Structures are given as structure tokens and as C-alpha cells.
Image 1 (cartoon, rainbow, N blue to C red):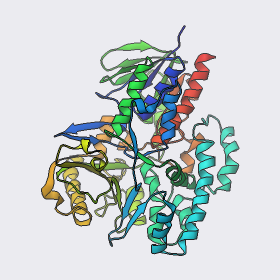
Image 2: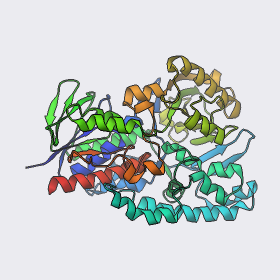
Image 3: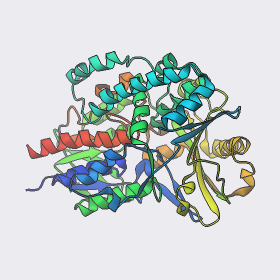
Length: 493
């Protein structure tokens, strides 16, 4: 008889896992609480603008192409991926501009303009990044860490690359210019990590981008989500939308089925969750494993949240690139406010997304689409009423954009709304409103992260940012490969 599986959540991890299971002949149902797939990669359409909730930086397109190739299909049938150059335009308050790409000559020319001695240091950092990419991503990115022995086997490579050091510490050992140190370390923020504390293994992101490039799905990141959903359903999978899971049902030993808010109930041979890990364990109402793990996880360190301002403007800003990083006047001090002190910085660093410069269809004729994202403390560190603070902080971010990059912005805004930490908590069940789940510390990585298969309930699995290897599209797609391997072996044994 055909084996059956259920997946809670239709984010990138859930969809990637569903495609792998369905491709292996396992009848799979994805149950999604919201009205459309995507999870953190949700989408809004307002006043003719298409606003991606995020993420918007697509790296390692090969990890996505593999999902279609499992059955001999081609991702191009469903998704049009186009390259973005430069990867990011980096800017500072003093007017310095740095175009970050994999064009060696252009990159080294810009490095030399900041500090000629750092050109050789950058080359050495690139060699380091290639090494940790090979050991941390290629070899271990899709391997489940289910026991401590697996961690011990990885330890020599981690030690060789000084994984106990932070990304910023490693970068600083190679380059001396402060702006270059920021340019080569900020990437960890895109997966919820503090460059001052995140394991140096995450320096692999530089090599990942350099080799695979940075890409955009025409129509927006949610167009990639829609393509994944279409491929999953074409393989015979089922997606149930708008019906939050209320309980993972067990018989005392194994997970047996799901019960949703609507009263829908079904039995399955295996269950996986792509939801927030604290929320997911909270669904185990009839098994003491749930309450035990909720208590344990709440003692862990969670990544910060985000404050995102979505806005559409009349006219265009042709000099604003697709991805822009606006560093603030502080770097380490700002990170301390967000990760340690729980202060809302009035001098934020921002990531600005300008999708309509690559795909004009993301905005109505004569308009442009943007979002500006600021890392902020999660709800456990900053207890404010975002209904009050949100409009004020949105105005502050618009002020920064107008002063630094987009003159006349405020008078040209045609539509605008924001998304706050409280929305991450309410819409996504995110513990403390964290945007990236568990903080990517060495002590919360690999074996020390939520396991891809539960240690007590043998047919309960996890996929997504909270499990190995972590957040970011390549991370959650890698977690789907690791989890799928376990589920397929278990269900077919």
C-alpha cells in the first residue's frame, strides 16, 4: 500500500520536502494555515504593486533545480530565474559606494580604493570561504545530525576552520578596513545571525554567492513558491490552505494524524513540520514530549525579528539597484542593541529591495515597488506596542531613505504599509516574533539544533529554519533534503 505523509506549513522547506516525498512515491499532503503558500515568502498585491514578504535573495539556484530534476522535469517550466548584478550595492553615510559581485577585477579595484593592502587579504579570505563552503555546505548541508557521534565526526573540519570564532573575527583577521569588514560579514544577518557571534563557518555564504550568483524569480519570490506548489501538485501532492493545524495526534508512541481548526482530521504514516519549532512542539497536546521540548526550546537563543516597510512610489529611481544595503553610522554598537540590549535603534542599517527595476511588472505603469527591512530585537528583548511604535519607526526609515538615497521620496509614495515583529508572531506562530528561528550559534548548530527527526517520536520530523542546517533558502532546501532522506528510508523500510 502507498505510504502517506503530512507536512505542516507550505513554506520553502515544506514545499521542497513535499516535492521530494511525492517524487519518491509517498502520497503527501501539505496543510497550510494561511490562504496561500509561502510562509515567510508570502506575497501581497496592493494598488497594482506586488509586494514580496521576503526572502528576496535567491542563491544556489542548483539546489532548487534539483527538485524538478528528481523526476526529469525542468524548473524553467514553472519559474523564470534571472541573475541580479551587482549582487548588492553597499552604501555608507559618508557617501562611499561599493558594488558587491563576483567580478574579480571590479571587486579588487574597489577594495584597493578603500585599502590597497586588503586586496591580498581578501584573496586569502576567499580561500577560507571556499574551504568552509566545501566542509560546511557541500559535505554537511544536507546531512542530518541525529546523534553526538555525527557531531564528533564533523569536529576535525570545524576545528580546522576555527568554527568557534565569529564571522566578524575571521573577516577582521584578513582585512583591516572597517567598511570591508562590514561588507564581508553582513551576510549572516540575512539568516538571522549576529556577525559578532555567529560561527565562522557561515563565512561560506561568500563562496556560495560567488559561485552560484544572486538570482531573482520574475514575478517575485512568491512566483518561485507558486512554481514549487504547481510542481508538487503536478506530481500528485495535495495542498490544503486556510486551515491551521490544531493538534498533532499521537497514540502514545507514534504520531498518527492531524486535527485542524476546521475540524478536518486525517491519519498519516509520517508527519513533518515546517512551522516554528516551539509552535510545532506545542501541537503535541496529548504527548509529554511536546511540553518538555517547548520548555527546553524556550531556554534557547532566538534570532531577532524584522521591521519591514513596503511602499510603492510614483515614477522611478533608476539609480537604486535591485538590492541595496545602507549601513548606518554604527556597526558593532547597532548589533549590540539588536542582539543583546534590546534597544530599537534610531540609526538603523537597512536592506532595500527594488524588484521593479528587474521586473517592471511588479509595479503598475509609471510606478516602482520597494521594501525596506531593518533588523530589530525580538519580542522577548523589546517589549513595545508595535501598533504605536510601528508608524513612528516606519517614518524614521522613510526619513533615512530620503536623506541617504531617494530624494523626494515621501511626497512620491503612493501606497505604504509595514510588517512588525508582532505580525511574525501572529501570522506565522513565530516564537517571540523571531524572523529566523534559533540564532545560528555554534552551540545551536548541527546536532545542537532541532533534529530533523524527533528523538522520541520516531515518525515525527522537522524541516525549515529551526532544524539543520538553518535559515535562508539554501538552508531550508538543504534541510528538506536531509529530512526527506530520513523519511523515505523510514517509510520504505
